[in-house]
Figure 1 (tube, rainbow, N blue to C red):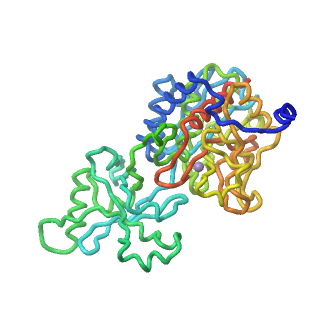
Figure 2: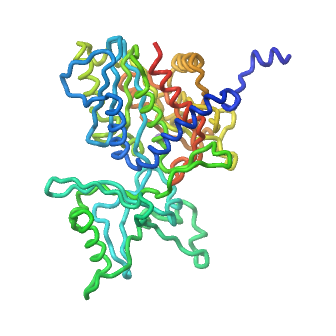
Length: 460
Ligand code: MN
């Protein structure tokens, strides 16, 4: 019976029972590089800058339309500094399709409003409008830092990073003390902290003069010294507050990683490292670092934009291949994180189909919500294909459904790739506390996601 059982049952194993010491060391080294990336890149623009710098070191050059390309050539194209496409030209023509991996580099955050500065009772604040799906109560009483750009009327764009360095000041949103929180504590968690209530405390010292709004004046004077800006310049600024926690190891065994923005920079780094490491691929490999996934892949830098099609069409035209012929033979891994089973909240998950920490890259045949609404639902054949590739390359993997039926759900860029007639499947790292200011992943899964994407890139 034991023999029959092991032959017929599908039993998953913890990844630590499947890898040897050498691979554990590889995973450690990989995660060290990932943690550095995560620590430095807090917004999509910074992730794109970081990736371009790394790619250039590895021989990638900026793509120019009309450029002659041969097998092995490495190119990249930035979409307005917020999204990035990297490609390694394959030996086979693009009529055989491309192998695409797409992850997003935008994460939930608090965007400053266009007119953000206010003074109330001699304290200065920044008003915000949150970006992406957040639980608002998680964003109060934690240190926050500022990132983004200010586009001046002169045409100059000034980059802002304030609070990332240890000796730089941080910002915070206050909460009511428990002593006076009786009314607040009776509200639901959705109502306890409001969107308009997410205001950053940014200053308290008045300008040494008489008149009104002296704290605001003092703050503007400081901003003017730092960035040469006036209050009007906020109108054409893109600034946001993100958690100021440093990325760190989690657990006595150091087996996990804690940090902000792992959704989805954990998969973005996996893809980036994979495309940097792929050698002379058979089919053209494409790595996408996408923007605006958190708000439905909208906008000119989101995956619904024609920017990707234009880039792919350029590549195809250099080989006299119609774009549609390339797309119909292409394969895309939509590399996005999934919810890891959390024993603290068992009621939200269905154990048998949830991904777990340390069980490897999580494959989601479908995402969506309420009867799979809004998913691209990859075909059985596509899942079988990945089973084969992962088995050949010894990638530890698992199936991953996001939570219980009718508990909620989510989406990724997958459906926008599928809409282009590209076979697409979701796969990525399981995350605890997803979309929180501080998310947790397992090192083994981070490494296996890199290994999984590389296996797909290298497949014949
Ligand atoms: Mn995501």
